[in-house]
Each structure stands twice: as C-alpha cells, then as structure tokens.
Length: 179
Image (cartoon, rainbow, N blue to C red; front, side, top):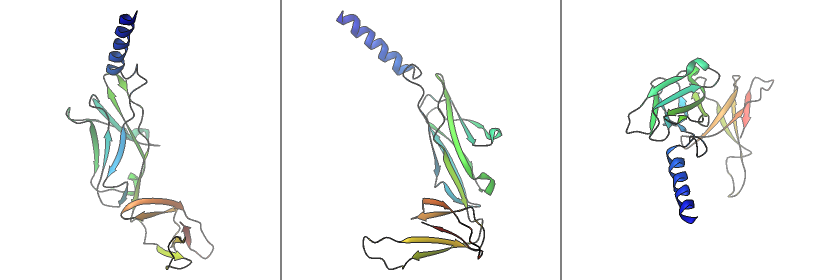
C-alpha cells in the first residue's frame, strides 16, 4: 500500500510541476515601469512584463482600449518582454496590464500599472501647513495649489511616486489638494 501511495504521490508532483494548469493555474506576470510609472511628457519609459521561462508570447494592453493589445515575442533565454515608449504623450497615460501565453495556456492578467504623465500643466505651488517648521513627531499638511483646474495632483518623494489626490475647485479660481 505504501509503495503505491508513494508512486501516486510522485506522479502527482511530476504532473503538477509540469502542468501549472493542474496545479491551480498559470502564475500571474509582473508588470513594472522603468525608470518609474510617473513620467514627464516627452521622456522615455519602458514597460516590463515578467513571467516564467516557458512563456512564449507576451501581450500588453491599456485598459479601456481593446484595440491597444500588442503581442510581442521574446528571447528564449529571458523571462520577460518589454514595450519601449521613446517620447511619452498625454494619451499614453492610463492603466496597463499584460499576460503571457505558454504551452500550458494563457496566464492571468497582471495587476494594473498606472502610468502617469506629468509636465503637461504649469507647476503648482506646494505649501506646508500650518508651518514649515515642525517638531519631531508632529504632523503637517502638504497643500498643492494651482490656478488651473486640475483633475488631481501627485505627490513625489525622492523622485518616486508617493500618493495622489483629486483636487477641489474653489470659487476663487484655485484648485487645492491637501496631503
């Protein structure tokens, strides 16, 4: 009885290892932007989709635009593929996803990547409230204000995306957002 159980267990492990569909589905790829998902208009960005070595074809798409699917083939020695945008435009902003195809089928879609294009409008004003001098452990509010109507603001810390917030239009013509 025990040798039969061991043989069946080994057979199950081999089948499960060779065929991810039997083991619960293909793994989800990882999508990232290099150097960052926050890009100044006119600059370049590379979207990288990373999956397993047996991935044969990657597909990138922008959410809300079914015609934007871009199939790409990659080197057999790599487990990723990329799309290079040499001069980003405002219409490139949005949510992107990717997936791959392998001999075992089609993977789940990646988590969404929000590509943000900056530098389209004049620079806003950043203020520290109530005072720029803060005691250790104290709290502050960073207020971003513009005299143009923005849909939202992005707070960047050390060249990296920190958070975003929708602006509130005020009657005096200003559009502030408080972080």
